[in-house]
Amino acid sequence: MTEQASPRTAPLMGMELSDMEAAIEGRYPKFRAKQIFDALYAKRQLDLKEASALPAALRKEFPTGALTEHSRFDSEDGTVRYLLSLEDGKTVESVFMPERGRDTLCISSQVGCPVDCKFCLTALMGLERNLTAGEIVGQVLHIAAKHHLDPHDRQMNIVMMGQGEPLMNLDAVLKATRLLVDPAGIGMTEKRITVSTSGLIPKIEELGQSPIRPKLAISLNASTEEQRVELMPITKKWHLKDLIAVCQAYPLRSWETLTFEYVLLRGVNDSDADARRVRKLVANIKCKVNLIALNPGPGIPFETPDPERVLSFQEIVRAGVPCFIRKPRGLDIYAACGQLKQMTEHSGLYSIHE
Ligand code: SAH
Ligand code: SF4
Image (cartoon, rainbow, N blue to C red; front, side, top):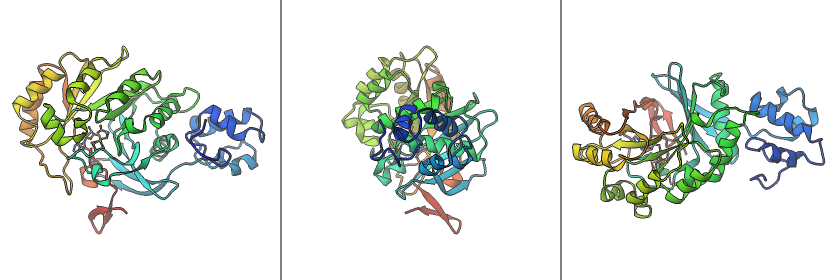
């Protein structure tokens, strides 16, 4: 089944092989679908004009649905933030973070986000819409093409930590994941794809039941129920206590470790007592904790803790579970965690792209 209304002219990007077979049925022989699949995902020919094995009529008839670049912003640290245009004129953000031997692509799952976390710039956008599986995969293929990346490369990672709450768009996220890991197509492994959630309990359970799924990261961000309600009001519905219980029961694969992310806000959730509570909360889960010192932004009513505070917090958590400090990337171009709000540059200053 395709997600689009008209399979004949629907973009190919995001279609599984069976969708492609349905799209060409009655017009072209079935084996052409396999060739389209191969051209788009294995050879990553984002314009079918390059796919010389296909008949000219077919190449013209079906748009690939590749995303187009609205703008790109290059950070001093090598990070690149892309603002990519979607078919309906909306834009979405994706970030490329090169690191020696290990590149990370941070991609979006929604335009904006409906979850109103108080420290996150994306929250200020609200939700515009879900992305399709094609638009999720399209971000990966766009960045891979721009930076000559080979998704088979064991060093390439994808994190679904851009705009949006991925588990509110779980069907598209899972379909995109299947396409990313299909050995006949893009050919990544599930070990290299991570999805991050603010904690939608039933969707975490559903994710755990999916045979092909990314690794799971949970945005913890608080050490008590009350604190989390203040920072992440979604906690009123999905309590911290139950979130931890669902993490304890989560069916991790043998090679998998759960990740907890914790944004440190000066004087709010960064005390030694918070660190001890975090250590206790995650104590009997096979996990690691990633600390992120708040990335500031206009309209965010919190401050970043001093580096020494971050180190002390890490020391305490590390006595129980592995704990790392996530280095901010692309701060100068609004590309760091929680900063994705479609900022565009005007005369050296960043303002919101409408
Ligand atoms: N919506 C999903 C994924 C996108 S947010 C989620 O919340 O998990 C990706 C990460 O950025 C989350 O861990 C979130 O807690 C963190 N984050 C949000 N705002 C931030 C900010 N201003 N500074 C640092 N990290 C932030
Ligand atoms: Fe949405 Fe994640 Fe930002 Fe919360 S932290 S508003 S869930 S993008």
